[in-house]
Image (cartoon, rainbow, N blue to C red; front, side, top):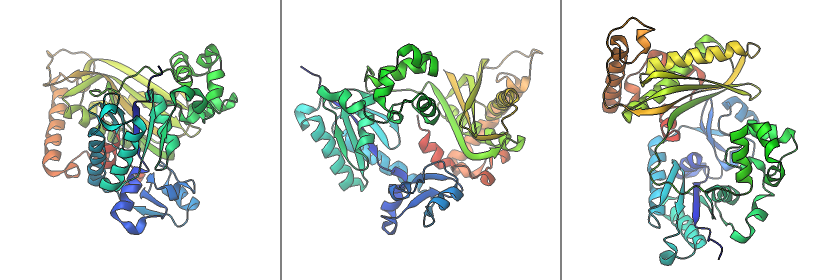
Length: 414
């Protein structure tokens, strides 16, 4: 007997823009974008003109002259996203929330109570629309990967249940960009080889695919193209890394831009680490150039760090090393920082005073400890008076059109 499609993927449609249209009915049916200098999110009406998240505001207005920009209601995003998840929880406790607006759910133990997976998905959609006021798309399949693809096919505001007997018939004609892990760079690389559908990806010999994309990525995408995905819905997932990124359109790679952006990202990442009483030993930076090519640099430290200034300085060294190796690249479109090899850090472990290396970057030295203590004081002040109440002067990125901190906190939740 074929296994039933009991994994659901539920994804709120154009979530941030849909919330703004819910809060202000006068915006319904109109092309809107959340943001200003940069598009944080776009409604479906705006997407029809080619407007998309991460796009500079000027370019968005050129594509859609009657586009309306609105500010974000970040507390409402959290509240309404939580409400939608709680509706899904009425049908199963086996939920893996992967962002503020989407989650997987395993309903294998719920069908005897609520009906077939497709009926459960349809009921969730009706309740979210009626009780929360937002559209949500649902995909149902035997695997997480296929359920996620099904929800994308169902958009906007629909449901797709993949028949287990015809999974590959459904999967293989679809665009290769729907495969989990295929971003713009990988999609372009595959297109250069004539691969535009998932079926064409599946037909590519494994050795050729691994040679084109690397062994790990090639093997993973090859398996997903054949719907080989053994992952379960993880209800207690803990992130193995913490990261943040800043898309900036096309900007000259000046020291001022690099330093201010990295300090901002380090503040985001380090604050989240300290909130969980964690620190990390491996720091990785990523730079994306104007042609969408990316390079990464990483370093593993002898002691785990969580201080904002230490993280920013090490990330700056890594970025400048990468730029030195690519001296012809003078324009960047994205910077990112992530910290991995995480460790529990309930308290700072001090070192004996020895003369070796840069004391300011070693967390257990007097100087390193002072930086950590300062950050903890900043954390406490922000908890009491709000994030905008205190911070590093160099973190202010108003000139660069950066994403507001509240939006990042929602988008980057573990």
